[in-house]
Image 1: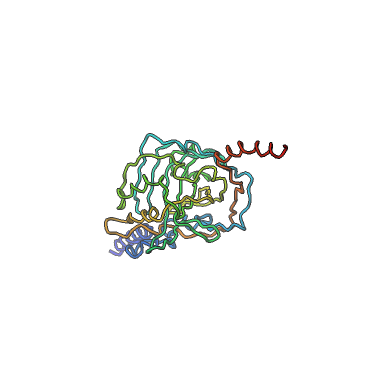
Image 2 (image 1 turned 60 degrees about the vertical axis):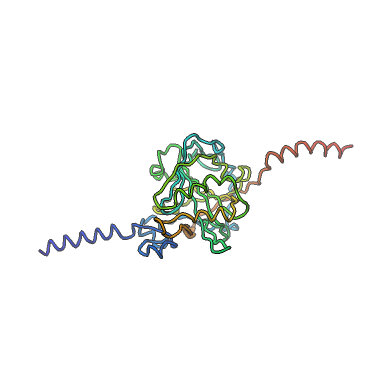
Length: 316
């Protein structure tokens, strides 16, 4: 009888350990789900979340190191609208878009080509006419309204799980989103939010050229680079982060639409403040491209036309 009791007790302990800490969430979900593990306790969900190379971080510009190898990135097929539809989903933590595209990045100090597999966003919360920022990264302590992450994996990796087997398996491009003027290029994406209001819902959307969601590529020459992790459990530390200085612009109305979706089912908490707080650098270095912004093609052409006239007038 005592032996049976010990066996049953041991099974209960193992079952309890398997259950506790398995459901992670953001702090904004705690009121509705008090038993979920917020970012302070993500290490109980996965021990890797307590690693030494965690993301996001606060970038202190006076401490960054100029690296001449951080040349402008090469964007392949970012300007191509694919033929296969994208899958947009509410996974209970963010709005995620799975890409059916052949878009890739290279150069910029990367040791090979990386293919784009998905993008997702993090954002804050609106209260009356104020918007409290929700970007994950910050520069000198300043956050922006939102942050877009485009996730890439090594060209020779089969999927995200396989990419985690390589020390440099994942490359994420991070773009700040600031509140400014309306961005019509986001109309298709934002219109799809009505189709994924509840957790575990998805929809098929028309593909877009990825570069239509970004600032002009000639403005993406200034960026920061560091080694880090995924910003949600399992917090895997195989990520090369590229954080761009130039933000994307959306209107306040456009930004606020992302909080029309919910963390759970109907009438559950609206999805807001879905960001992880900044993590310690732990001796890591942050590098800066330091490149000068290139002139847009139209301005280059104008200079090419005007310069001969100016030179001619000087020597007359």
